[in-house]
Length: 315
Image (cartoon, rainbow, N blue to C red; front, side, top):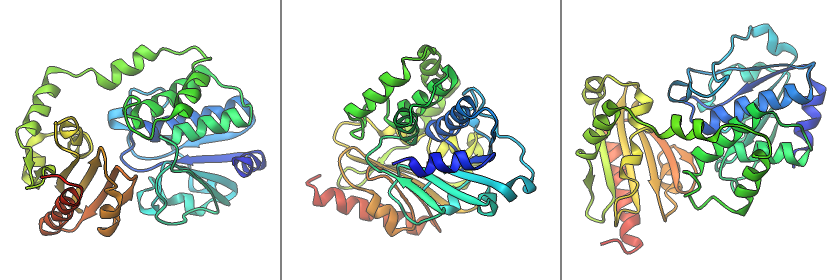
């Protein structure tokens, strides 16, 4: 599956690795993991990572994006990770590279590179990079293993999501043959300050329900300003407060900004991706997102989600 990827890595001395904007643990983990996997096995390569600020995941080693001059792309390979839509790629200069390659596990919305490996059966892009390393018998380092393990943990929901399979654990076992500190990963991912606990409590108190038990939170621009937090921690960061409510199988976080209404959709049972796609979004069957033009459109999406819940027997 990865023969073309290895061929291109062998071909190019200059490589730039891209990922999606507002990165999560999988985006950062796959980016850092692949960079240092290449450098360990091809030490003469020039490999850089680019993108916006990792914010929430800045605790991850080597996650700081690098400055790359435009001219570097003239004879470079650009590898795009964990991204199914061109508009979501952080740093659009990937288009100027000599050749491009994409590795992803989302439901594909468009072809965006010259060559692609896209497998939605994987729980994470880090899982795919790990499979690449294992399949091609590449040497791991503690940094590579820790980065990829972190991405698998975050995108599998600590191995709770049903995308987690025996293969997931097999790949994690493969990574853990190299020593790294798992405790530091979990401590950084899940420990919270008391201020963060209070912040989450604000969102818990805002949860509302449709007639068929779709949970949702709606934050206006004014709300976002009053929170005095980065936008990502409000939108994607707070969708999880609705995840474990008994009787709720679909939940959605609506957050306004200058682009419109940013939507984070989740479900424990149903394919909500088709509704995300209807409104110009995408992602996974049970975890998707979209950007809507206004609150009216957001309420139309909510009505569609409520109908989906009704069709599946939610009362």
